[in-house]
Image (cartoon, rainbow, N blue to C red; front, side, top):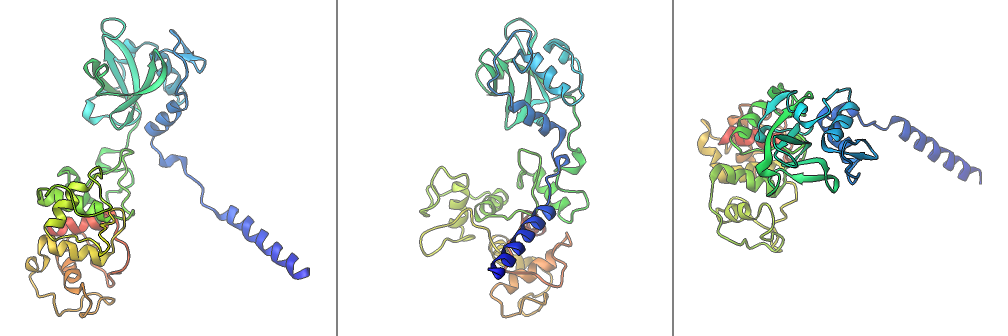
Length: 333
């Protein structure tokens, strides 16, 4: 009995410590624009009330007046006046938290306003209440006038909010993003430390090489509706990324750094780009010359312009990250 009590006591101590030492979510990690969007979405379904400026009922400009007011931003009361504040933003440059304005709805001129939430959508008070609509809908698309930015947004020079300018892969990601080879997420993040999957790798490589799809691919786990289907088909046909013996491709499975080196070698013929022979040279302490991927791995070292691969160890069996894959593409394309 005494031993059981001691065991329970130790478990409780560990539990309390785990709560005490657990990391806390940092609200500042989200931009003010994202925080505005998050608050606005909480009122989805609130009824439309002409002249309304409270959670019991909103009209379009009253909804913005209320939401932005919660963040200390004193907006004018009407859509026509809201049109006059902030900096103009084109439709293609909108970010979450920007204001979107429309004309000729229930009256001529500027007559409706909403909050851009990302993914070509906005939230506003419509006749049916607070709801999300598409900027490209048959109704709203022709009536869109412009966006207005009134809140601080991620610094443009920083490219992505989670990618500092001094990151070793920054220039690589910046260039590839400009070329539409590498893309970020709707929340203005890049997530450099996330794993790169086999499907993502196929898409990124094919954005560089532009191989044509051969039609339906031969893998039983990649349907035509899969976002990577055409790229996987093209890359498979080129012999760059192969499937498994069970007939699967496993598009959402991460790839190791060694696998990354080998598929890039197949795609870009890395050994021909280096100025030295990499077949019999040991570059990394953890990659023997006899290792199955050693030549491709060593080529990454010699072609590296980012410093990401200028290390003593390669960590061949570690999963490749989005930053590492971007840097490798930048080095070899």
